Image (cartoon, rainbow, N blue to C red):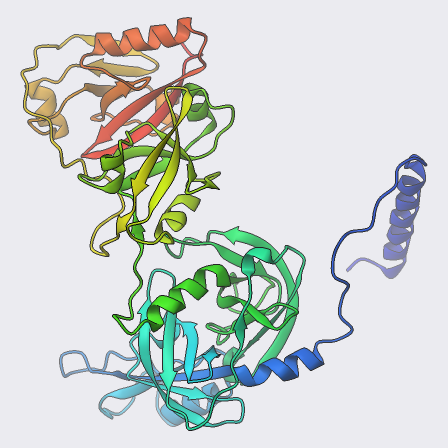
Length: 506
């Protein structure tokens, strides 16, 4: 512990330093007022208006025995840690018995708790899919403690959104969607839900960040908040100060399992459209657009090799056979800069932009090709959930004879033409083409970029290479033109990707 006196002296020093800094600001410098909504005096009126539209969700799942013998079930129902029911069930199951030794009571019920909110007075309720996944029975508990059985209207696992329906003889208090795109970092938000099974609880905070990718799915675009969110809050709403839903509280970052002020919510701009499709009586499923490309990030080295001023966009590594991109003339090596009028600053944006595009819509795609911009029109197709949004290299080139066996060393790579021995050594297909990487120097740029022995180099500087001499010539040409790096198209077991190697090395 630091003595109090020492702490006082340190605080005085900080105050003195701060005063010195303020005095050092030139008199001509004027800091204008921030254009932000003032902090509210309180949230009581808003909370009272919103609480009736938020529901608690309880699910029950039957846990069966494994092979008719010992029960493959947890020791107790899956209540959130800290739930008032946790100790009760622990005592009920374990009283008088060693831990883990329970009588064979047959299949047991596991219960979990979550949150949701009414989006339609007719009884439609939005929550997270993981809240109701694998549930045999779903019970919605309204703010007045009314219990209603719920059925699943539709669910979308990729965005973790589910739509429920309850039968009610009176309209339910519903909330409205807000515009998450209009929400600014620093805006006040309210989170209402069912943390640890305690029932309707209200917490407040600010919008901490936008466009967070937490690797939970292909369309991650989370809002981040410091409003306390805990287990059981999943599926509950995040409100703006107008009482509109701008997010669905979905996940937290926490080493301990409790709130540390880092929570994530699905933005309403995405959730609203998903819920509309789930509610559609035609099939209650989400229809996503499909472009048919496999993409990778544009690094600084790749940007320099392609003549881009800065790293941006999504680099097309390969195309799906007969996909929309291939039909529109998009080529491997193109960089997608804009999609349907929206800038693609980061490759992670493109899958979401494509998925949100209506099927059969024709969109303009701005490409960077051969050091210049070009625009193509693409008719978006429907994504088949069984398909992968990557290129599959299904158009195999015809088998050709290989006589090139010379070995070339450059940029830390030992290169060779394709020979029968190398085919056997690296399990290359009969239709393999390009230049084989035989060895990679440990301290080379190629090793840093993940190039491996057995890789096939198909292109250099977006030009096909058929033998090591051609590749060496492309590298020499790039050096003479003053380029700092060269872009290689590499194939590894049918998977294509681009690699930019620095040229300023021996």
